[in-house]
Length: 238
Length: 292
Image (cartoon, rainbow over all chains, first blue to last red; front, side, top):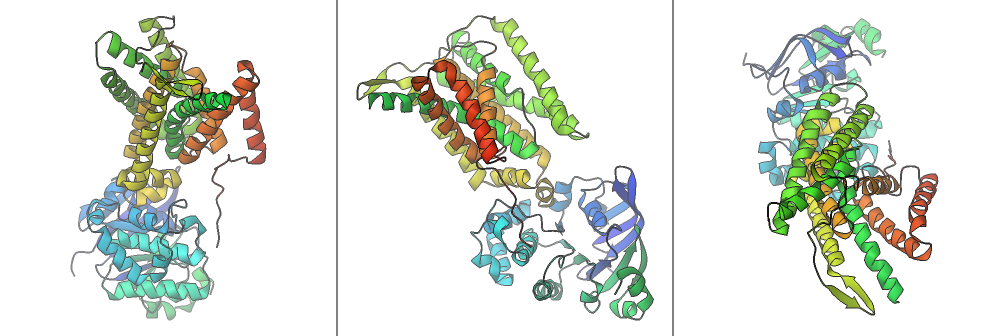
């Protein structure tokens, strides 16, 4: 197997001395959709923040294409091509949609072909083109999510990490968002997806990892997960 | 009519000076949540450095002004490196930096007291002459101040709106974590903002001392007014601060004429209280609207 995009080994991390992650191992292969599922408050977002450098890794290692990135500043990690679309969008509320997207292309090499990227994002998410001069804080929930994903795409190719892209959206809007995500997968993008709503992704994800109480307790593919109703019942309450 | 021209002319001059003094304060608060209590001392330092440049080094006034701005930018940078950066790593940054900058301001003021003495000194940067509007003689000095302020504000607006650096500054002030996820090195943004704030403070110090006089404590009053402008506009709102500064300048000139100088500050404070009762986040304050 080719070298994975991201290799996480025995990582521990947390806030103010409280360990949220402990002994986390994960491999994200190139061109695949890797999904992390699990109940709320068990470290899914913390893991993404640790990868992005927003939360300090206290033990273990995180390697991108074989080079360690744990311990680097968040901007250095982004510069190496690890892009996160954070939970709840975290748009820049006072900026226009266009300025938000341009902020996505802040990375040095993304800024160079921001124009071409913008066309690509507008083709993929035509709604954003209509709204490009609107202040981001006044968008609807679905539009905000699209703006968040579009902003992530502006950063260029690389590992795309999506933190709960369906959170708080109406089912029909979730469908639209996932259509975009699956299009990206089909185009060969490497994606690390955090999702509470396991049913959404069981059929499409190349591998699924169940994070419980700060560590992975089960890994497999969607069909295997479906064959284990006790896991779904115990962890995801469905 | 002549009275009106008089009030507008001096009000705009006051407003322009407040605007330049306020924008830096507002930028720093917007991006770091830092109330820089040394701002007034940096402003005074700018005035003295310009004076020293012209009087002791024999520099051209424009060069002295630019030099004062550059040196005060360095002071801003040093405040970032020496105070803000270490304090950012710990809890309670807002309170700690507030107290730390009071100390830095006090040190700067006392150094100036030691270096330049306690007596008022005239600022040698002066534009002689006047224009006549109606029956009113408007000093060219006032127009010069207004012109410099307009150019500086336009430059700040251009950088904030049109450049990659400016977008990063705005992004950091709106959401620090999201800015980091875009690849913004927030430490660099903080350093840039404090340096720009220092340079703007220096220019406003030169302007203020050119129509008043230089003294080690001259920064206190404009800093207080800059804070008032910031609060009225909504802390951290840069454009609101410019508008509020000019309006307050005009109001101050009007109250000084109508009620007398001693009422001007009281009136200013009264307006602040009324504004904050009416709009607790300031006139242009951001009240987050979240639709789901």
